[in-house]
Every structure is written in C-alpha cells, then in structure tokens.
Image (cartoon, rainbow, N blue to C red):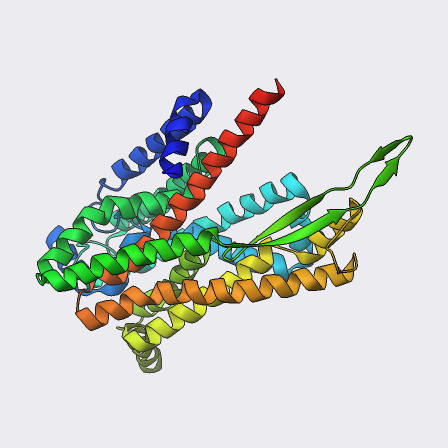
Length: 427
C-alpha cells in the first residue's frame, strides 16, 4: 500500500510528476523504435526462428522486443552493458583508470565517456554477428560482401539504434526516475508480457499446472522483495567532541548493509556474458576450417544443454553479485569516514579492525544474497524443463528484472519525496 501511496504523492508533486512523465515519454520513443523494421526482413522466417531458438529469445528480451521484428534497435542495450562490464573490469586492473574512478564527478564522467566510445565497436561487431546469423537462417535476404549497400545500411542502423537507446537510457537516469538502462530492459519486458502469457496458455491448458505456476510466480516476487529489502544494521557510536569553544554531543546511528546491494545488475550482467560466447560461436558453425567449426558447434551444444546452461548461469549470477558488491562497497573507505568523524562501532577498534569487521559482515550477508539470487535466476528454467512450459525460461529472468526495477524505482521516489518534505519543513 505504501508503494502506491508514494506513487500518488509523487504525481501530486510537480517536479516529480514531470520526471515520471519524461520517463514515460522516453519509453514511448523506445517502443516506437522497436516497431521500425530493417530492410529485407522475412518476418515469417523470423517468427519460426523465435519459436525454436532459446538464444534468440534471450536476445529479444534484452532488445525489449526489438529483435522479434528485427527492428533498428534489435541489439538493444546489450553492447552498452558489455562495454560497462569491460570498463568495470579495467577499472580494477589499470591503475590510471582506478585513480580516475576516485576523482569524483569528473572521473565518473570520463569513464562514462570511455564506455560510450567502447559501445560503438561492440555494437558493430554484435551487429555483424546477428546479421550473419539471420542471413544464414533465411531471415535477411541481402547481406554480405556481394550486397554492399544493404549491408552498410543494416549495420549502420543497428549500431545507431544501440547508440540511441544508450542516449535514451542516460536521459532517463539524468532527467527521469530510476536507472535508465534497467528501465529500457524493463519496458521491453512489460511490452512482451501479454505475448508471454498468451504463449503459456497455448502450450499449457492444465488448470492445476497453470495455478501452480501462478503460485510460484507470487512466491518468487515476495521472496525477491523480501531479500531486496533485507539489511543488516551496523551500529555506529559518536563520542562527544570539542570544536573551538563549542562541545558537540555524541550520538548513535547505523550503517544499513543490504543483503543484495547489487540489485538486478548481476542478472543483467550474467545474461550478457551467457549470450556472448554462444552468439559468437553461432557465426563459425559453418566455417570451412574444420577445428573452428567443431569448436563452435561444441560451444553452441554446451549452451543448449540445460544442466550446463543452468550451472553456468547460477555461477555467473553469484560471481557478479560478489563482484558488484565489492566494487560499490569499499570497507576501507567506510572505516576511514567513520574514524574521520570521531565514530566507532561498539566493541571494534577504529581504523583497520573496523574495515576487517565490515568486510567480514558484507561477505557473509552477500553469500546469502548471491546464493538466493542465483537460485531464483535458475529456478524458473528448471520448472520450465519439468513442466515443459518453455516460456517460463524467460519468465523467471523477466520477473527478477521487473520486480527489481520497480522496487529500486519506488525507493528512489520515496527518497525524493522525503527530501522534499524535509526541504518544506526547513523553509
């Protein structure tokens, strides 16, 4: 109920209402672009391919339904996500970039600029890969060195489509509500939802099976919200201190450590990485070089095996949860800040012991959050294999992303409303 109340209050606040309307406007632009097809697409062949190929369905999820029509935004924000992953890894390994990331606003803007530049060649490479695959499947009539004009126009359109989506996502983050890139994926999933429900009803007519699927969906949503909201509060005590002629009394506060501070980012990262090897391998399955053809066929077969696929997905989600938490929460910095302001955690000495204590606590609660996220990520796929309802494979990932984005966006709205009520009180 509090969530709906926050939304109503936000719509009554003029500047927040404008932010919400701006976000909706950007999503409408994106949905319009998802309906602009590329030249020479055989739609019947594409529909047949979407029904039989799980990888293409996952790619379509990330393009927000743009691949179902092979539109100009068919690649979605996938190249930008891959560029973000590469830049995040480089930040940890290249000292110059690590220094730049610690330079506040200027450093962040510079790294964002490098990420945008890296997105262009990645989008071009991915565009070539997807187009070659589509041409071999009979979806594209003209593509390759013999059809230069259509090839250049298709690649230019796909690359430009990704750059436009990246720009729309950044506009949403800057002027709207929530994380823009997550919102674009969210909008695509919501747009596909009626189609997914229709497919499920066509495949599964058994009322008991459908009822159990609905119950599982509700339980998964409740569990996601429970874990997303779960936090460990570390108490911090501040001693009395003298500044000049004035004495400031001590007080107590707490550091809220979330069980899953990474949100839906690990799921998005894991799927991007899962897609990449099989996507690249698809292009070489018809290669003239025998060892390359055999290796590519083996990689594609590996990712189509449900046991290996689920295991890899689970491990990647767990790994990315740890990786992203380590990147966003630095115990040494938190310990230094507590020490600088004369604070201490009861029973723990300031400085290094505090950093070690925080590191231990974060690792313990992240293990619980990461294992839960990994389990929820693969569970719908396993249920899909048991019940033979393949639409659930995408349903699970979709639920995770949709619920995660809604929860994070509502928290942002509540924070902004709280900030405005404080400002009104101060005035």
